[in-house]
Length: 464
Image (cartoon, rainbow, N blue to C red; front, top):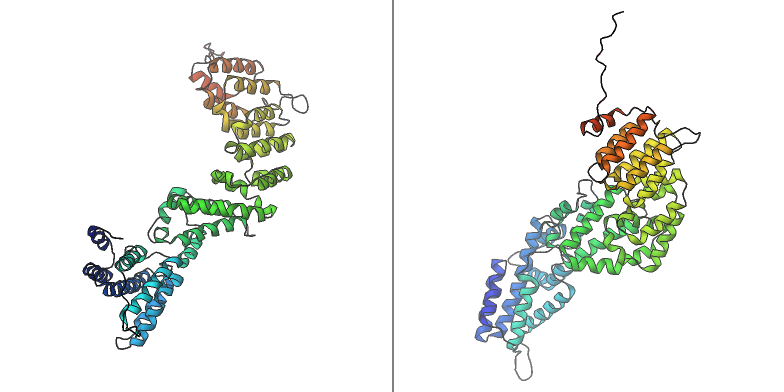
């Protein structure tokens, strides 16, 4: 094993701390001259110095664990070698277990460096007087490991920051917008310098809050939790994929019905995770939809999913068809969708009261009216004109505020249908024959030249 000298020169330039760099430079110089024992000793000192400097750096950023260890360092006096040795013996445990600067595997490699350094720095007292002489390959391997594990990296944060970030996500000030959440969490003070295990733990904690916590999840909190997951996905896609692939299915299978219902608003935010839901849980989700009341369907945003989830859409259609007209209108009005267009037009046409006619027109039809084609508009007009209500009285055309609905419908649809002009002219002619007065609609039709303004009587009135 041999690297070009330029590789080591490049390596030394990437070491962050000047003091650790000086020791690693000595190690490389010793390695190049064949003084491999000296190289190991200098490499170990570089590791110790780097960890100490990272402790001080993290302490400045108010990391509680780092602050405690800095206080321990400050207590060590220059004339107290015993305290120095005690700290040095435990330094890798601190770096791994307390501060999570290195992983368990990295710690085991550096433990071997420490053991070999001790052998190099002390006589072995062997019978034949021979001393340990590390091979060049081992000295070089330790240089590269020390640099790759520690020296070239900024101090990353561990379990302490995971709790702080989770608490931050739960605060009302945390953004619900995913782009803003990404900006906040990608900061070096947040997820920008967190170990793999820290990011993974945070993602798991977020999923647990959604599907395992018995405490309710408000829509605002769910938005914040989803936005934070989206930020993790962008920052650490591999970690995100590993967590949702290995953890989500288990959490759903263990969730009670009340907690499993949270899957509906969650999928509205993160529908890309639907493939991670296993078949058994999909069967449960179908059962939930069938068993939910119309109020629960609206509360858990089930009908909203018809826009983005074809599998759930079919179950929702079947559920809605089993509801009565009043329940259907309320459920669809919660999240109007073009997928309910035919049903919405039918419900509008079948209104049994003035209030229901206005509600269904404004809440079911207007939100999706920009998608209407000529036939849709024609069906709305036919339903309005032919409605007989509950007592043989037209509940649509006689509703007090229905004129505002028709005015809004005209504005939303006039640029789409090819036969828009004729449809509105015919409708206006029919309602005018029945002497319905929809002033705001008439003004718009006159303004666009669809109908002629009414002629004013120019005769002077009789003065008595």
